[in-house]
Length: 135
Image (cartoon, helix red, strand yellow):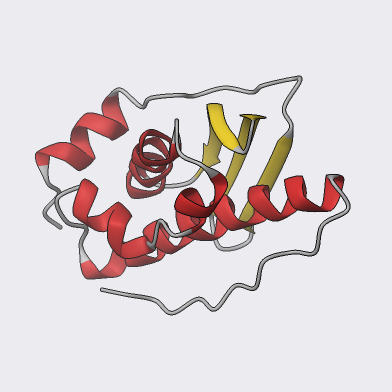
């Protein structure tokens, strides 16, 4: 299995690892039974993700996908963050092996879970997830 230098960089030195105890939003997605779980924590001010941290349980591709996803959404408003797709994650990582595409999907879905967690905390309806896996 061939990994890009960007995947290896984010696996060996992941960005934004940790927990934000005073998070405005928390999203978790995945299955411990399958082996990959991500959890994102957001600090949100004026509809913008000011800070983000993650915890991930899984393979190197899952850790790299979570790391790059946090970089992609930090500083973005919630709508722009929602529109980050698994394809965006793959492109930012300069590719993922076909058998690891699901890790990019995990990142996209975890972003959605966190945003909808925030919306629920504000009494707002969740945004619909019209997910389509993109390769």
